[in-house]
Structure formats: C-alpha cells, structure tokens
Length: 528
Image 1 (tube, rainbow, N blue to C red):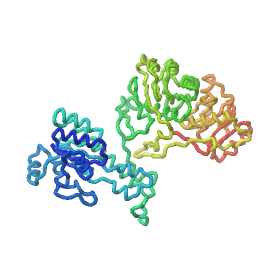
Image 2 (cartoon, one colour):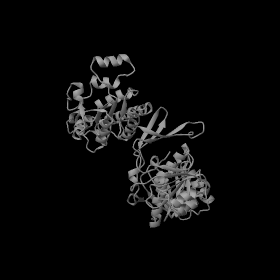
Image 3 (cartoon, rainbow, N blue to C red):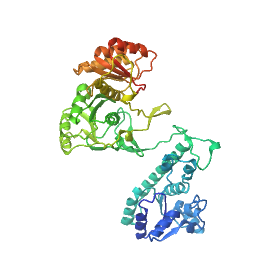
Image 4 (cartoon, helix red, strand yellow):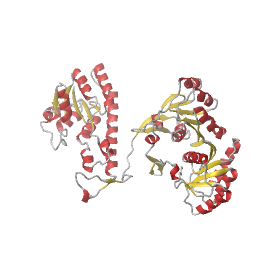
C-alpha cells in the first residue's frame, strides 16, 4: 500500500505517518511535509522522485502530474486502466492524506492583501482530493486530522479500509472542497477591485454582502416533521457554530426535539443570554410571554411565570444561570416542553428524572454575550434569499434622549432598559410593560400597534398584575398618539420608543399632557 501525504496543517501528521510506516505502508510526500517526516527518521519518497519532475513556480506545481493523478484515478477492477498504468510506469496510490492551504484563516486576518489571499488558493490539493474521492472504491481520502484514528484502527484490524469508511471519507472530502470553493467565491465576489491600486501590498475594500453568497451547514438531525405534521424537516448547524449558541447544546434527556421546539428554543435562548444578571425567559410560539431578572434562577423564574401563566403552559424555558434544585422543583410544577440552561445541578437533574418527556438542554455560555451572536440573518422568499446583518445593537444609558418635561426616575431607567431588551425579541408590533425587572404584559405580532398595546393590558389583567407605575417599550415609533394614550391609561408612567415619526411632536405633547416621561432611542427593533 502506498500513501501520499501533503498537508498544510501538520497537526498529528507525524504520529499518523509513524503508524502507517509500522503497518508497512510506503510514504510519498511533498515539500515541507516530506522534510518533516524525514527529520523524524521516516523513510519517505518525495513526489518529485515519483513524477521525475521538480516542484516549480514556488510550489504552485508539484502534484499536477499523470503519475499522481493516474495513481489515484485508475480503477483497479478495470484491466484497461491497469494496463495503461503499467505502460506508462505509474504505480497506484491507495491512501491520500491532504488538507488545504488555509484560505479561510488567511482572509479572516485584518489587513489581508489580495496577493496573500490569491496565494492561499490551493490548486494541487483540491485536484488530488477530487481524484481520490471520485475513485473511493480503491482509494482512501483523508482531509481532516479527526479522521486519522479511524483510518489507523481499520488498517490495524484488517489491513485495509472498509467500503463504508472509504465512502464516508469521500463524502467528507467533497464536502470540504465545496466549503473551500464557497469561501473563495465569497471572498473574491466581495472585493471592490481597484486596478490602479494593485500591488503586493494592496488590501482591497470588500462589500459587506458578496456578489454570490455561499453558505455551508452540517445536518444535526432529521426531524419527525416540520412546522406542521405534513411537512418534512431537518436541523442544520453552521460549520463552526459560535460558542453559546443553540446548535452547541447537548440534550440531556427527553423526547426528540421538534421543528417548533427548536425555533422557540432559539428565541428563548437568544433572549435570555442577552442579560448580565440571573434571568429567565419563557417563550410560547416564538414570543416571550414572561421575562424576568432576579437574585437567582428561582426568583427570576417565579417572576417570569407571573406575567402570563396561561401562555407559559407547554412553553419553552431558558435560564442564563445553572439550574439548581429550588428552580427545578418550581419549574417541574408546570408543563414545559424544553428547559435550557448553561448547566444543571445533580439535584436538579434528579427532579426531572421522572419527567422523561421534558427535554433538558445544556448549553454552556462563554463569558461575553457579544462572542456568541450570529453576524448575519437570513430569510427565504420566493426563489430567493434576504440577507441582513443581525440586530445586535445594544442600547446604553448614554444613548437615551429624554424628550418630555417629566424625567424618568433611576428605577424607571433601569426598567426601561430591561423593557427595551425584551421588546427586541417580541414579534412586531411589540408593546412590553415592565416593572421591577419583570414583564407585566406583552402584546405581540399585531397588525396595529394600538392592538398590541390593548392586548398587553388584557394579558396583565388576566394575570392579575397591576400596570400602575410601569414602564413601556415599543419596538417602533408610535405613528399616532392613540397608542400612547392606551398604555398611559393602563398605568404606564414612562415610555421608551425609537422616535422618527412625522408625528413625534404630537406624541411627545401627549406624553407631557399625561405627565409621563418619554425616552427616544433612535433605533427600532422590528422582528417579523
């Protein structure tokens, strides 16, 4: 058996080569990899010796040769192929270990020049990978260090790779080539090329959205059905999911997640991890129906549940702190579909052991919220895709513009920031009443902002919560004063909204007339 090794990332390659040599595999290699293996005392034949042609053009041409591709592509079960190899003095290559030039890492560096980007476009590597992957019945193609152990294990066990492993390696190889080519296309089609600036040090300006958008995802699991039972569905994750994102979670117990579970869980998780203090979010049908901060998970849950106990039934619950026994016992008294947290104590897990259908998700959180947010958001439309930067705007106290005679109290300002954060995760039109770090009434997804305001009041009344001296957040401006009138009549004494309406002054005058405080953010949070 002959193996050709040509890797850019040399992690684990020496140990792999030693294991192959111990199994009697002949080693062929290129450039720096060959030198590394020789330094380790391994017998290795350089590709130039195999091809009879030296590496040239600064290494751009070294494996693009019939003695390489013929050895990879020849079908061992086709006499004509084998005769052709013999006639031209070509030996078969049975195992190819390749990883590609680090194009993605190169272009991700600040100040990457166009010259550096172009030089890190691998040509020979992808060509060999495609040849080996196409001929998977006869050739094993290894493109990632995570595959090394399985390859060695099978070679040790039977002296060859199984059809199943070779096919799996081939699929992984074509996936890697697809990812690589997509990254190159994304980069090059985002470059605003200026010929007059072209030089070895030229760092091109890049458009935020490339001329062609290539995105890659890996399937996490097939789902029983989609949003409705007659629809088919599957769950995919990013190639490199951000730490602290839903896709990095581990299900500890419970039934298989459904399409709607995942969608609602994401809404709850994205909301709860935006809070610095201990928080709980309860979501139903993609909308927060209860959000609160507290001294601990039990307090934050108890407050969040009070907002809308009816909607909380069968909801999705998320904590941004580990769930302890006290919180678990409180949550276990209601019907919950999914419960998420950075961790669960042993006692909390014991509480839910008997509730075998409750889905428990553990999602460790990194230290900083900004490290775990999606940079882009997508939405499918007919034969197309809408792509936008994610709504990651964080409102600070200094951003607030007070426009009324009445000034908010310090307590109102804190609740105002809390309410604004919640409103960002409520479907538009969104109206959110809050007080003392908890939601008191949520109006979501109505065609009229006025109706959302009325529904929020109705929800609070049903939950027996007083809206007196609450603050209200509106995700977009009040187009008329009537929406403001409704929330003030319900008991609000402070309102936060983006502003920007032609009738802003009319709404501000109405706030002064009512004797309430109004604060403008200059930023809206539509969420459709």
